[in-house]
Image 1 (cartoon, rainbow, N blue to C red):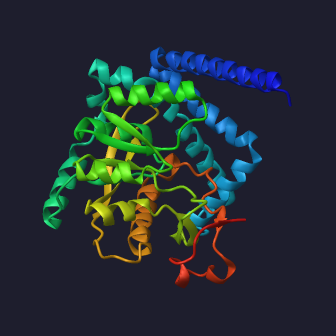
Image 2: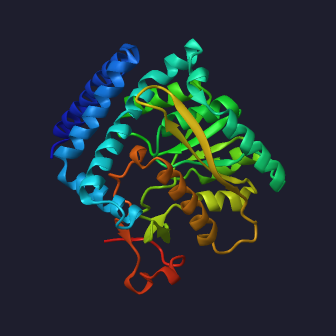
Length: 326
């Protein structure tokens, strides 16, 4: 391939990124200013349509739900639940579009019920003798975007770890918007040192530890089946003495209204060698949060894609083997 051809290909790529960014911003602008009773039902319907059209995602969602409910729901009930959940996940796009406007207008605080959550958090922290900013862990449940921004409102210098977007224009815009609202983004790859430094500086951390880990995962049971889970919450807690908080930001109705709830809070001792124990405890807390509102969870994610080595594919050996993608 000639140098001129390579240059042309890169140029077309930049143009495509810019065009994609312009389209995305236009759509987000529309969602920010259209009435809620138009935006959220439309996104809900779009999510349901997506699941009906995507055979692969539909199969994954129903399989995940079947594990979670262990034969207590019929296939028709699981499909109906999957459709509602996929619609709820699409509604998060509406939150991304509207949150800056809602915060700047002063309406955001009235739309988020977090008083009971904050009271319970402080009471539990006092009972356990925990100090310093916590590591907040939430699944892709309800509105994980609003959960992250809520940290920025209540804790100075909140830091969220996230995988960078492929489009540099969208990534720069997202980082700029979140930083203006008190949330810093750390790239997932190589971000552990930055997170430890943030915790030692008394900055709260936000993590989404409910997705499949292709590399360096710890196998623990999730809804009764071994899954490759993120070890970083337990590792960060071990390195910094910060506590782990399992929480969720549930949507109330099909609007920009939310309720924060706490599931568990615990510490990890500095001398802990087996990170599978705190990782399993965190995943059990996440399961509890999900089952409180299963119609708001991101079931279409292939949670069990990475499998353990054959000799370790048993619950009694769930903590030892490194992840290996088939």
